[in-house]
Image 1 (cartoon, helix red, strand yellow):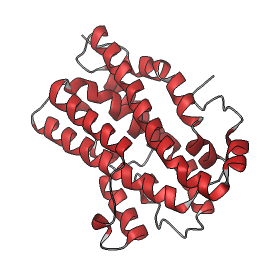
Image 2 (tube, one colour):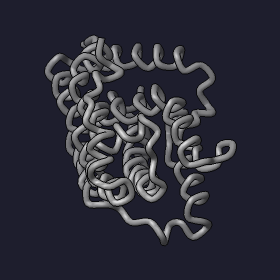
Image 3 (cartoon, rainbow, N blue to C red):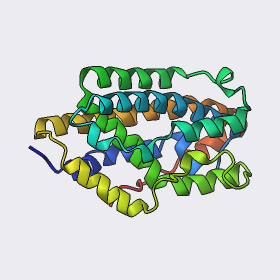
Image 4 (cartoon, rainbow, N blue to C red):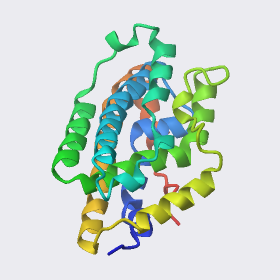
Length: 236
């Protein structure tokens, strides 16, 4: 039995999406205030998150899990793009220079737990991260490129989905795939709850990154930049 999961996910995560956009780190980012040390830490943490997610997705696809196999789009995978960016920021020895933060560690542990105990809930994490990256990628890329004074795609590979020629068409296909997953309404509700949890884990990561920003900007300037609440790009 399939349910209209795509629309339910979109509506069911609107509040979390807006809350995430109003964390200090993201609010600063969206206003063009991007500090290099914090940004490098962000992509380091995202590397660990996507490494876990993609390992689990590939395993579940191989095992032909009925809910995960349909969403195993390799065109969305981000690990390799993050490796390229980390090499740019840290050099060839980047693996020995990055460490996972406590918030990212908790996020990874949750991904592993879900993948092993309730794999269908991984859909919530998949939707929150990948579709968020695809939807906002080009905007964030332009902001980061200007703020960090980068040339070409150097250090910005994470935002490039080279295997997706038409973003709109892909998202339509993705939504159709979600709506055809073999789940009932109870499972759909659990996936939506998990997607909101994924937002919470992301917000914890963003919160942990604020320390560097405050150190560079000063508390007064940081508070001034982040005081206005954004309505949120998913709100109508």
